[in-house]
Image (cartoon, rainbow, N blue to C red; front, side):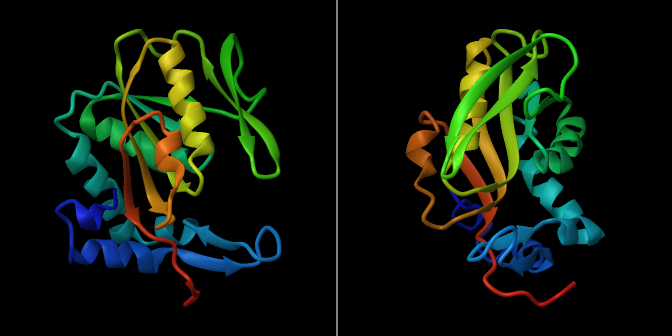
Length: 191
């Protein structure tokens, strides 16, 4: 669900967050309208508002794990985790974590990929939030859910800053709620 449909309709923070995201046409390839959150990170107020909205939502849900999807989930996850009193667990691409890992492969439009997590980072029964910057198809988030559930975690929700309005990934998220702040921007107004 989009934040505007869940009590934040007309909240000026959502418009400011959307406007702080730069659109880079044809990156990384022709036809892609890349949603660049680095400009959101440069805007202290918009970045803080992004974190604050997530913190307000998750503060009283008993979440003990915030799992961030590499790499842009790492930008928001640690701040949210600290604010709600949870630990941050990075879900990384293959061969990025030292030590013993558990892996979950998933299919992309153009191939396959994999997420890994340290064995022992999450304990059975812990309540987890999965965070990423953008959801398109839901494939990466679904892999994150499967990875966390394999170690016995209860995934409470997935959260993204940006989500396609026609997100069909909801059915691929194993019935887990999906919370999205804004839709992708169509044009670039520069920094």
